[in-house]
Structure formats: structure tokens, C-alpha cells
Length: 64
Image (cartoon, rainbow, N blue to C red; front, top):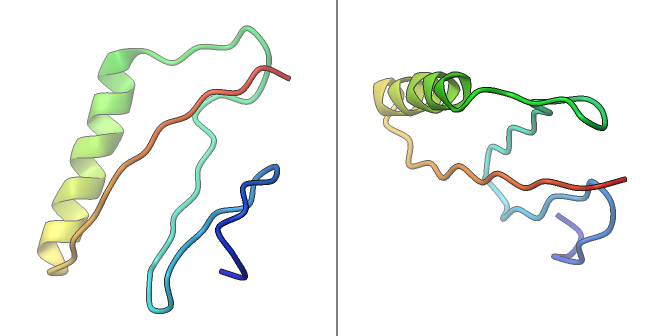
């Protein structure tokens, strides 16, 4: 929250935001099925709705 400067794993958020960060794969060459990502997205959407929260999901990939 110090700034929106993107360096490494820094995540920008506004005061009062709840930011959830999760690695869906852990190393070079690993993969995750689209069906698994969709399931995770649906679960988060359901949780957010139950708690009256707005949400956004962002996925990025890095090559180390």
C-alpha cells in the first residue's frame, strides 16, 4: 500500500481493501488446468457474494 510501484511481488491496494495473493503454480514448467482456475474463481466469487463484497480477480505469469 506504500505505492503502486510494481517490484517483485508487491501488490498495490487502497486503504480498506482486502487483498488475497495466491500462487497457483510454484515453479518453472508447472501448470494448472483451466478447470481448476475456474473452480477457484467460482469459490472466491461465491464467498465475496455471501459477504457482500465487490471483487476482482487478476492472473499474471512470470518467467524466472
